[in-house]
Image (cartoon, rainbow, N blue to C red):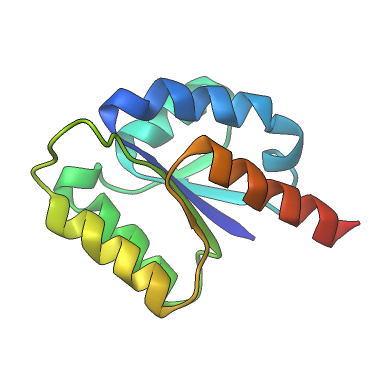
Length: 125
């Protein structure tokens, strides 16, 4: 299963905290993490193996959207900062739309991401 991780600058610390909290699930051999550039670097520093794309504003969101459309990415954790403006809002909206079109679960906060991971755990039992 491939899970994409993306976090706006104001949410990167929360993403790393979430990853560390759920390391027992996310570090399994059958889970592959892909990420936008800076988020991926932060995850690597926390000890995770991550395939990094470009940074979000440089096209990373679009790269992950393509992976969703190709059927490679099965789930997306995109911790959005709702209190900040983002110059690449069109890419963000496109990624969310592609997830909807291809029926791929998308979590925009840690509470929803936690529920999706619980579903994986139950499914694997």
